[in-house]
Image (cartoon, rainbow, N blue to C red):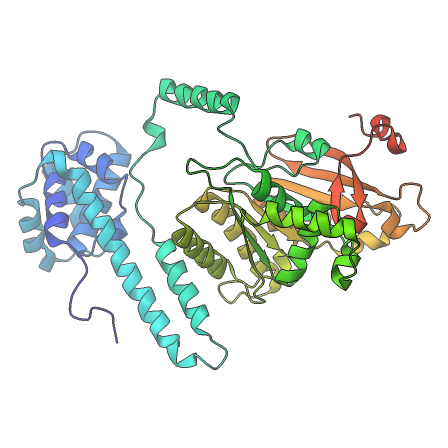
Length: 462
């Protein structure tokens, strides 16, 4: 069954009016304005596609264009046949208003997106009988959401057309907001790290990677908790909306870790329920601080980029607030939206879509990641970006790569117990290097390194 069977999704009036403009007295102007919104494939009619491709070829060739040149070019286009002459003549004679060319093109673009939706909905309909046999209603809902996002609205603002003065004004406005404190990114609360890479900002994909036991989840949650509890409120006084996806750890355990880190309460005593009196007081203080936050956690085992985006969009709709940070624990536990030839290609797709998610939702995405076992074979086990599992796409897509190393994990008698090396392996807008931090395992947190400890000032001065 085809959606809207018998009802073609197109506007003959808009397509013919635009063709009429191409045959008018300002064809190049009409084409340039239309090309900001559509391509030849957005036309439903063959005459529309042929005319647009002919105009494109003539404009690229340069020189003057008139209706005779355009008609001759159309006749030479692949797919032209004599039976189209009459409809082309009708289209060329269609009245149009030059001031409405942009609107004609927008209507054609929206109708084209409607046809794309209809086709993809039809494909999804074919999968419905598989529900209950490896396919869940959530999977179908996620595909529908991904379909809607994939054919999103056409951009109406063309940044390339903005002049230098406009761009400078925007930069000055940004600096003013920074100075006034109205623009603040996401911070870890670890001074050495935050000073090196700056605040995490909208559109960034941040990878936090390390071997098991190094503290990937701890750092990811530290970003989430620090921003969710201490980030700047919005205009309505609401604390930042933070979305955490954990396919590895249960929700309750993540909140326990947050309580341990923020309240400085021994994590193992929280798990066992053997808190001492002063820790109960700290837990009460944590409850009062955590309760008004907008930190939302999803611990569903199955996660794809489409389901993640769908859930975030539902969260924004429910709360009426824009999400300001997304944390994913961890990348290799995610599944691709589509079947891939191998796992490496699937991870590449996931990485690319997480970067797209950061841009689409206008917030940083922190994705935790595993490292290859090859680290274990080296004498120096400090990780580098190439140690990322299926690293090629992840390295390329990431704006920032943070690698964790604690010497005591490998050397129980290490002179550097309680010290963590937070290695910035990539930072598009910051400096690479190492930010030393204190590791407080009993509290499940990283902290600022006390001055003079381990002589780190001289070791990491650069």
